[in-house]
Image (cartoon, rainbow, N blue to C red; front, side):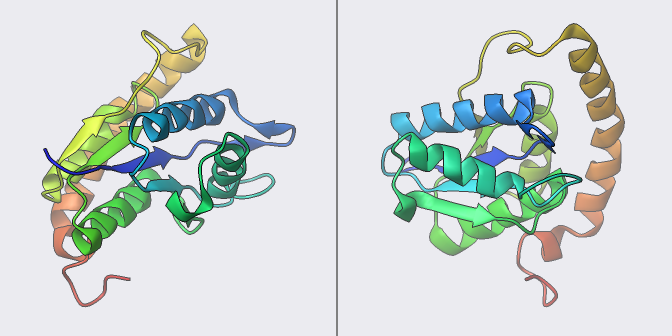
Length: 174
């Protein structure tokens, strides 16, 4: 893999009091990737959930405060789930010729993201992350791991059925 990756930070909840611990971890992973690849663009992906501003806008604000230049940041406020974020990343890679997507998310989430990117013929790699649960509570980790296990076959079926559209190859792609 030559050339810089597209660093993609996948959203997590914004709570009434601010970013969730998961969102803060993911921003940290994205920041570490941005520092390791100073020429790489950074996709901040996540729409408005139940509370507050969009996940992407929180990411952008935090990354700017850490010194990432605004020219590198791509703010995707429209994606409301992982599948939509994957589609945005895949389209970006196709348009720009980025070598791959560096996936910045929690360890339980990364396999599903990479599976969907693979179905869309987009190379990917796991981005930096903390070992083990990355600081997540055992209960949250178990809940999210179970959720991912259920989401993988569902999202696989969706990606296979909508592959051309999601990859930006179909007429209905936006």
